[in-house]
Each structure stands twice: as structure tokens, then as C-alpha cells.
Amino acid sequence: MTKVEGLGRSALPLSMDVRDRGSVDDAMREVERVYGGLDVLVANAGILGLMQPPEELDEENYKNVFAVNVDGVLHATRAAYPLLKKSGCGKIVITSSVAGLTGYGPQLAYCASKGAVIPLAKSLALAWAKDGINVNVVLPGAVNTPFTTRILDDPHKLSYILNRIPLGRLAEPEDIVGPILFLSSHAADYCTGSLLVVDGGGTSRAMAQ
Ligand SMILES: NC(=O)c1ccc[n+]([C@@H]2O[C@H](COP(=O)([O-])OP(=O)(O)OC[C@H]3O[C@@H](n4cnc5c(N)ncnc54)[C@H](O)[C@@H]3O)[C@@H](O)[C@H]2O)c1
Image (tube, rainbow, N blue to C red; front, side, top):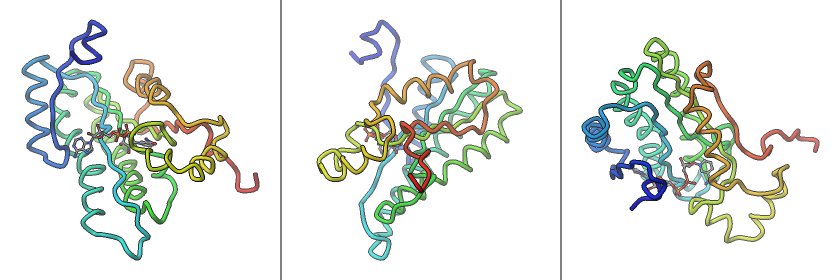
């Protein structure tokens, strides 16, 4: 039983590789067969890739990060489009990152890919406004998930990051849930092409502080 089913709600676990348009299309067909439609798509799959200085960048790794983090978003949003359009009030939330607003040499591929989905989202927002579909972006800071294990395991990196977060702690996954729920709901009907930073204030610091 999934966690969602444990709450007495219906869930349909489907596996797909977002790099492969065909596998995303198949999953979306299954959603349509079982539920008859779709109201919300959260394009959340993402990978960090290897940590490497740009001068030693592994191009295969770079392409793979883009295949998941950018192509994957494109595949999912395009596959969901007909169903979201049919819904009449479809919502798309794309998970970028504050890394997409800044840069970090060893995470060049990740930062560039998370930046790329911002104009991608804005382009979809403009194109699909006529279909009643809102497309918005959530940009988490550092979240306590398996994704950040490499940081959490290194006490120096962890304390460096914590010192830069005004709220003084990493985000827990639940901290990102509320903003995604908001952007998925009618409360956000007038938001499209919007960016919602959820980083405990980390990117708000002035250089002088
Ligand atoms: N954890 C953080 O600090 C942080 C910060 C900012 C943004 N993000 C973003 O949040 C999103 C979720 O990350 P997370 O922290 O929960 O990490 P996570 O590693 O726990 O989850 C990533 C998910 O993406 C899925 N995935 C990876 N490659 C895939 C593929 N090819 N096809 C289908 N699914 C695939 C994985 O199965 C996993 O469920 C990612 O887009 C990540 O870039 C995370």
C-alpha cells in the first residue's frame, strides 16, 4: 500500500524514465485510462549529476543531467498537455532550484539545467494560458532528502550552508509541499510564469551581510 492509499485516497504508482518521451506518454495514457483526466502535473524528477570542475567536465554526465532535468520536464509537460487542457483549469508546477538562479562551478550542469527550466516554464505559461493552464516554478533551497546526502555527510559543508540560511535550518520535504500545493490550487489561479523561491531566506542576503 502506498502512503497516499494509507490516507484513504486513491494512488496509481507508475514507473517511467522521464528522459524517454515514450515512457512518459505511456504513463499519461494509463492516467487517462484509470482517472479519465488530469488536473495537476508536478514535474519534480531531477538529478544532481557528478560534482566536477568545469575544466574536467564529463560531457556524458552533462547531457544526462539535461536529459532528466530539462528534457524530462518538456516530455512530462507535453504529454500532460491534452489532459490538462481538457480539465479546463490545469496546473503545472515545475521544480527548479535556487541553483538555477546562481552558479557553482562543480555543479555547472545542475545549475544550468535548473536555470533552463525557468524560461521553459514561462514559455509554456504564455503558450498555454489560452487553454486555462497555469505553469509555475518552485525553487527550493537545500532540502533534507537523499539528494543532499553528499552535503549532510560533510560537517564543514553542512555548517557552511546552515550559516547562509537566515531561518537556520535545511528545509524538510514538507516545507516544499505547501508552496507546491498553493501553486496547484485555485488560490494560485492568477499566477502563471511565476517563480516561488522556498529557501529559508538564503538568496535574500545582500553581499555586505
Ligand atoms: N534536495 C534538495 O536540496 C533540492 C534543492 C532544490 C531542488 N531540488 C529538486 O527537487 C526535486 C526532487 O529532488 P529530491 O531532493 O526529492 O531528490 P531525490 O533524489 O530524493 O528525488 C529525485 C526523484 O527523481 C527521480 N528521478 C531521477 N531520475 C529520473 C528519471 N530519469 N526518470 C524518472 N524519475 C527520475 C528519482 O527516482 C527520485 O524519485 C529535483 O528536481 C531536485 O533537483 C532538490
